[in-house]
Length: 112
Length: 112
Image 1 (cartoon, helix red, strand yellow):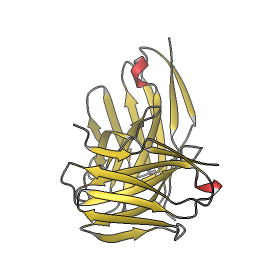
Image 2: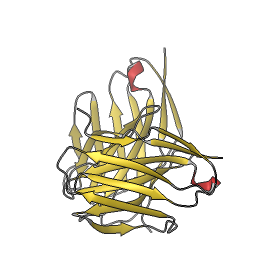
Image 3: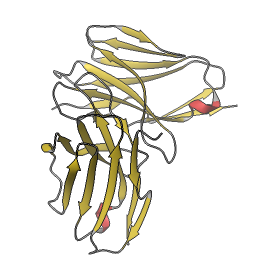
Image 4: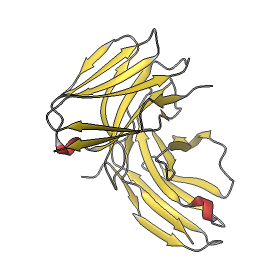
């Protein structure tokens, strides 16, 4: 069956360091992947997405890498700030009107 | 302007009661969704509506019923509430297969 999972439930990093959050997905026809950030008391907030015809996509301080060979997705956050503290979800979507399948989430903790 | 808004933010009620959660989106999206987030932060899709038609109905109890008076609204009605229904419910909207979903800030439902 289709699934999306994250390797670690909690990731602790020093402020100013780079953060890498990983995600693995099972064999799937999905070719669209999304990273979300969820802060306490709020809904998931879109960070960055990538289609399977790309290996890498960059945004402001964030980069998503997609390795289709090993079915692995990662989110890199440069120069982590206190405001980056949140739960991060990877998600995938197929074509049509189906919804997103979410991974279990990684709680990113920023150490001062 | 809030893109996806849902009310109420908190809902505390007793077992056996019937309650509703309202959702509105001002993004002009064609599809709206309801997601349930459990105590472990796992997000699971419940329903999606596309142009007033139910596209996905995951294996949720028939006590849950989505109702969409128009494209901008998708309300969630829950009958005969049970303790296990306690969770955070998120409304979302999307447009097309290759764009991210936009989420509301959730309704925390507590059944006592």
